[in-house]
Amino acid sequence: MKFAIIESGGKQYRAVEGRTIEVDRLPVEAGEQLNLDRVLLVADGDEVLVGTPTVDGVAVKATVVDHVKGPKLLSFKYRPKKRIRVRGGHRQEYTRLMVDFIGKSE
Image (cartoon, rainbow, N blue to C red; front, side, top):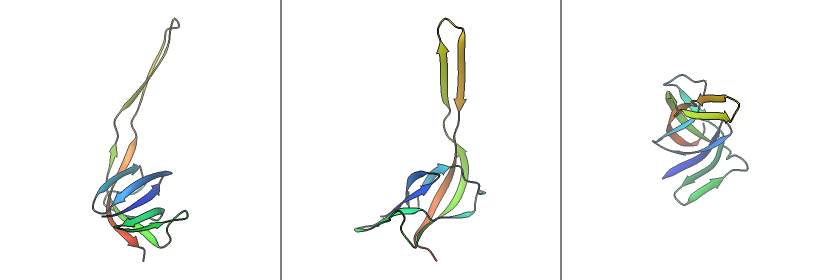
């Protein structure tokens, strides 16, 4: 099984060929091709390439499937005896990518 560890938006993700990953929202339309050049590690069976900090000449090609929202997270602030009750929420936006190819970039 061929996989790579990539970096996108300051976070690291495990990308496997033929599977989807969800990264922080990217300014790319659905259906477009995308090259992820920040590849930190590539593993293909027993062969492992570790970058310092990135692996040169290797890219991950992905297709944008769609843009989705994560689950709603609620926060609640409460101060007793002060009549202060604040409820807030947040929904993170993600981009779902289908990993098409991991290998040498042309």
